[in-house]
Image (cartoon, rainbow, N blue to C red; front, side, top):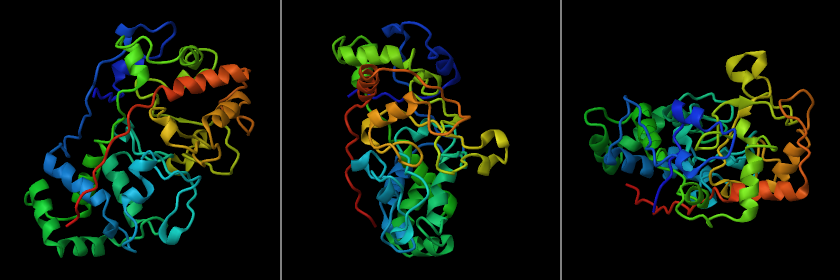
Length: 325
């Protein structure tokens, strides 16, 4: 099956600020995931990262893994309004999907991690999330011969450390890419009938009257930036990271790829369905002074935009659970 990677390269970002009708020739081919120079890809590293991602021993309780909150069967999220952490305590934000996180310039809703490697370390050590002592985790993995051998294959001579743990997990997460979707088949001319007439109208609205393309741009349908969309829940967002008042109430633009699998929506999970999201945007948000304005879309037009967004969902990534050491 064709795979659509949606990498946000500078040239592509410029090319996909569509102002008029996009032609099939304008749609990109299949760009590939890029890996950091200090963490290049290797099959051994990806295999180790997969084991670690699904291993509950990475948590202090030994019952939570990365996959507990980023479940492949739930769109690589958890399907909950707000995430659950240590002892099932409710967290402050909705769990973001891992899908296409390889193409995001920063991680988490507030962008507090610059890389996937940095992101992988955060939840493990967080008392609110996986509540694992890093030194205890390293000692636990060092006592498992299968892991000692796997780390040696992936990181010859480097051993087990939080850095190598994070590098392996990040390598695996970069493989979680959305599949070729009906919209891709339509845009690339492979199948002019791949999407419905409603979805085609929705695509015109998405990049026109509905103004979605202002933030959900590029082949990954995210500008990777931070915006205040008027959520009225008291969460001040990115200002906690930057300390800059201009970042108050701003959160990262999520991808719309595979969006049908990642409900509920927004950083606090307040919108249960895509139509709820459309109605939220249509009224211009819930708090004054944000970046939105009322769109004045009809119910029929909102249904068309939803039909378009649904066309961005491809076949699910099939995951075979690893056998843990």
